[in-house]
Amino acid sequence: MPDRRSLSSLESSITTEGPGEWSVRRLKTLCRLKSGNSITSESIENRGLFPVYGGNGLRGFTSTWNLDGVFPLIGRVGALCGNVHLVHGRVFASEHAVVARPALDVCPGWLAYALRVMNLRQYSQAAAQPVLTVERIAKLSVPTPPLEEQRLIVRYLDHAELRIAKAIAAKTELARLLQQQRLALLCSEVLGRDEGTDVSRDFGRLVESRVLGWVGPVPKSWDVVPMSGVFDVVKRKNIGLVEKTVLSLSYGRVVIKPAEKLRGLVPESFETYQIIEPGDVIVRPTDLQNDTTSLRIGQARDRGIITSAYIALRPKKHVDPDYVMMQLAAYDFLKVLYGFGSGLRQNLDFKHLKHVPMMLPSLVEQSAIVSRVRAKTESVEQAHAAILQEIALLKEYRTRLISDVVTGKMDVRDEAAKLPDIDPMELATVAVGENGDDEEATDDD
Image 1 (tube, helix red, strand yellow):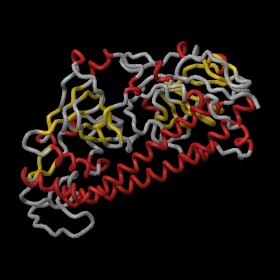
Image 2: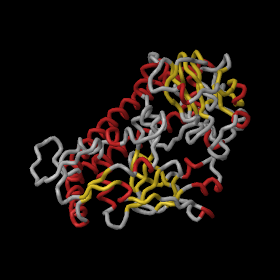
Image 3: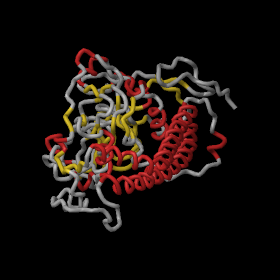
Image 4: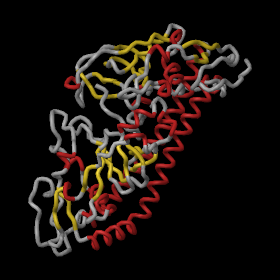
């Protein structure tokens, strides 16, 4: 058995000799890199015959295709540039995706795994949005095993991916159920009635509107006001780079974005960001017609900056920030917000959101409701946080495992030889939706 010496990280150029019969090759010798073709937003639907891949991954579907086979695709433009997807069959690759056509001695699946651990986003150039150039990444060095070993690596990692993806999917479903339980508890307090039960409180008024009609009766002591009466829009730009703590929405929470995810951004790009204060509410607009799953909302706990792609709202002094955040979280956004957007793709802006009605009890009652909700949901919140941590650890383990195998730190040939091949469509099905789940993303066309 050849000596399995560890290789240096794929995140930088590699000059060391690979383990055993491995060689170190430039990416341009492993594959031919070329951008896809132009496609208009109007040609992309939420359903269709052929998947469309752009700079941020899967964008939707269309009626035509420009690629047929098994190829790695690399996001070239956008917030998630550098992401890698292994596609099978007929797809449409837009000009914001790079098609990597493997050489004859290169396995497409192995190439996709190798590209994933190279952290290609760090090589992007910041302009209006990050851009990854083919010329730059083509020169990167990659430790390359013989073709047969590439296939064994793919077989081993596909089995590992399938196990991990199933575990993540199960935990994600559990997290969803916990969120539903939390939502029911929120509704019982914040929307002025008990979810799924008869009204037992003193209601003197029924709100007649297409938005709040589904909510039910509201206590007569509560006010119903438009969102513009509750929030001010935050439009303070980060001129002079006075703040450099970057915030992002993740699982409905506003969190500090890890520094490693900012590679490719130069400091000047932060001047277009908005300065956020603790208590501010952040909404990520979405195309509600074609993407009804990615609308996110969160409340900042730290001071920092956030990309101008988000809508940033600051609660006014006559409201409890935690109460209004709870009411927004209790809303069924797919019911409340659809129809407020403009244009064919139902894009949201505060000029539309400001008309959404909100129910406001007195400030004293708002604070009392917050206390009751926290008491009721504390155990659910703790369980949900624990599940999210487990998901994060599984993803971290998967990343490390792929890196160790692809760089030759783990010799998996013997074990892989005993494993059966996996149907790539089974793996794609169970892992769908994982790429970019907790990342901010914008349209790339």
